[in-house]
Image (cartoon, rainbow, N blue to C red; front, top):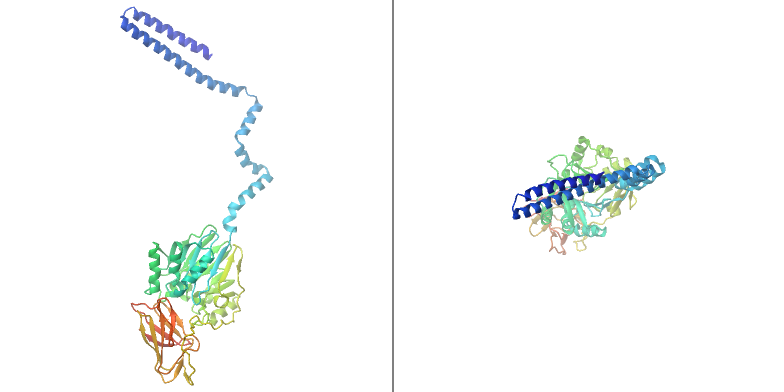
Length: 498
C-alpha cells in the first residue's frame, strides 16, 4: 500500500509540472525557458525525496508494529523477562524466604555498623593533681578534655602521638584553672584541630593568655561550652554538654563544662571541677545524668559529688584524677565513703597511673583493677627536689613566724621568711598563686631555720640552690597582679601577700 501511494503522488506531480512547463515555454523567451525548466526539475526532485523519506519512516514504524504483532506469545513473554531482571530481583525476597534471608544478611552490616562496630576508648591520663582526658571515638575522631598543668604539655603531646593521634577534632577546656588548661596550648600547636570549646569566662593568668594565643595562631575560634551544645561525634555516638547552666558564678569551678558521652548502651560523664552549685543546676534542669562511668568532680573533693547528684548518675565505675600527696588531701574521705556506700568501683590515677576505659557499645572494661577505697597514695610529692633546704633542729615550731616576705611577679621569685625564734618544718605546706589557682607543695623534711629565708622560683630560667626550690620551668605569676597565699599542712592560711 505504501509503494503504490508513493508512485501515484510522484506521477501526478510530474504530469502537472510537465503541463505547466510546456505551457510557459510556448510563451516565453529562451532565457526564461531555461530558468523555468531548472525550477520545475528541482521541485519534482524535492517532492520525490520528501515522499521517499516519509515513506521510509512510516515503513520502519509499521515494520516494527508488524513484527511485534506477528510474534508468538511465547516470544513476548521471554522478552518481558529479559527487560525487568532488577524488579524481579527486588520482589524476590517477598516471594522466597531463602532469598529474603540472603538479602538481609547483605544489608545488615551497613545498617548496624554505627551502633555495633568499633570501640570507644577513654584515656584518663596521669598528670598528677590535674585533669587530661583523651577520648577516641569509633568514627576515628578524637576529643581532648583538658590539658593538665603548664609543665604537662610535652607529656600529653607525646602520649597522644603514642596513641596514633594526628588530629584533635574537639578540644575542650572545662574551665580556666591552670591544672586543667596548662598544657592545652601545647596540644593545640602540635596537632590539627577541628573545634575548640570553652565556657564563656575569662581569666587574667599567663596560662589562660597562652591558651588564647595558641587558638589565635591556629586561626581557630572558640565555641561556647554550655548546657545543650552538642558535638558532632559521628554516627552512633551522642555527645552533649549538660553544664554550665548559668552565665555567672562566684567560683570558677562551677563554670566547668560537663560533657555526657553515650555510645550504644554505655555512657560517660565528665565533670571537670563542677561543684555542688553546678550539680544542683543539672539536677533541676532535668537532664538524664545516668552514666556507667563518672569522672569524679574536682579531684574527689568533698565540695563535689553530692548524694543527690551521685544518685542521679548511679555510676558503676568512678575515676578520680588526682596527684600523689597533694596539699588538698584529695580525694577526701567523705567522697570515697559516698562512693563506697553506693557500691561504685573506683579507679585513681595517683594509685594506678593512666587509666583506660574501653566500650564496645554494650559493656565497659578497664586496663586496671579497681583500687581499694581506703588505700593511701605513696608519699612521692611532685614538688620534691633533692636540693631543698633540710636541717635537723633541736626544736621545731609548728608555724612560728613564717610568712611570705615578697613576690617578684616579673622575676617569678617568692621569698618566704621565718621571723620566729625557732626552726619551722613546712613539709606538706602549700604555696598558691590565687589568680591561676596554681599550687606548689613543699617536699618532706623542708625546714626553715629561725630567721632564715627560702625562695621558690619558676619560669624558664629557674635554678635550684641551697635555699631555693624550683616550682616549674613555666611562668606562674601574672605580672598585672597575682596574690600569693601560704597554707600549712592542715589547710590553714598562714600568710597572704598582695
